[in-house]
Length: 234
Image 1: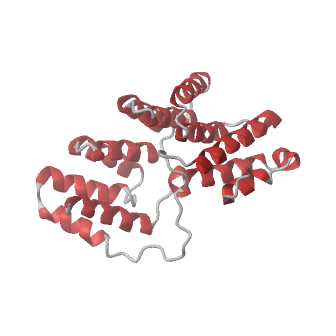
Image 2 (image 1 turned 90 degrees about the vertical axis):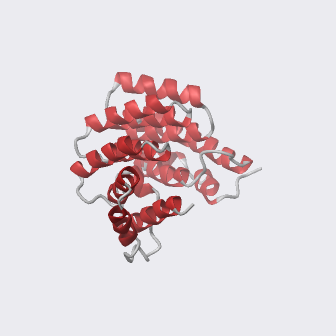
């Protein structure tokens, strides 16, 4: 049965000529769609779409459009499908052959989706070492430690992100929350509460794709602060 989802229709409409002429755009589109799909409890339709997307990426790769970006997106899709052993082997091999930020991130995500947290953290640190401007790897590390209640380790990661991007919209409210959990000083909770008073984005264009490329908006800042305050109120 043909897919009726928006993603499925997009994939079904990709011709050989499009693969040849617009491979880079196709990879970006697949990444955008793929990010919106859950990491767990996929429906049959979700699984069908993701398998079809991987097949399209393989066609792009086969037509000479191979790239680190394509590899990272393919690893993401395979991870969502639960093909953890394949992804880890693929990502680790790619990094060994070509050690760079994209391949390190792909390996880190593969380890993370398979439940190997410490290996994921190590590869996120490796990714950060490949790009002195990158903050996303440190944000991932900070979030992992924060979710585990490891406040000092979480704060250290967010501070590294802030050293590279002062006032980062994700790291700063997260650091406030960690400071509050470590010290118990309400001044940090007040700072965090203040972050929820911003106007945020009202244009309707906010998307998770910004996280993949390291961009964060005023809406991210507000949403992050509200999320963290919600943790405290439960």
